[in-house]
Length: 214
Picture 1 (spheres, helix red, strand yellow):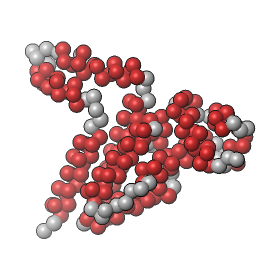
Picture 2 (tube, rainbow, N blue to C red):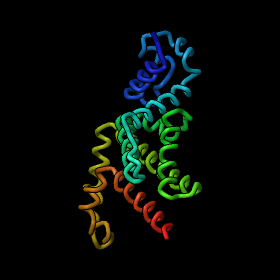
Picture 3 (cartoon, helix red, strand yellow):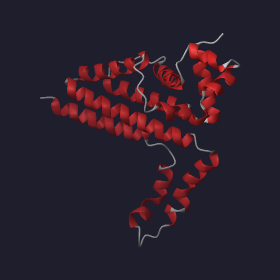
Picture 4 (spheres, helix red, strand yellow):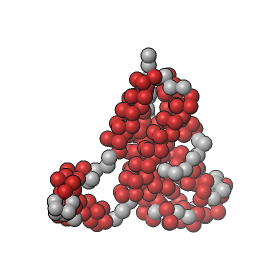
């Protein structure tokens, strides 16, 4: 017996092994051991499957998450959850990061963040601006880091080693700033800047809130 959930789980497996280019109705049918035409009873086509995959990732983001009522802690936890889920499913994460589903879990995220920002003291327009900056930053990092995780291991290693093999070798005479920081660059650029960038964003939001107070 097929179901939307079974099809979405099969699609996640297909993406893991074949990437976005390999996601097709025929391949989903093979993964499910079903006639591919049976999928059309649940989805109109691959586009609808992609939106369902996106909604499934967002479901996993909010699963077990209980907002505390403190805007900064809630936004930080939600942002890191989103990043973690998308990077755990890199092929799906790259595919889903730019999509808008209108589904229940997406609605829950938007409603919760806007509510936190309005309760903190932001008027409607600023709350929307902050939400937009927050969610685009988190989805941007999710897509960037998911794309890196989707690379073959040898490509990941080559890119990481470039900071040591190329940048650490640049002479101070021609590139004084890179030479002075090459060790730090090598250390920092091998990991995601998602968390530090999120904290910088939230610092800016907090400063804007402080400026609003008498």
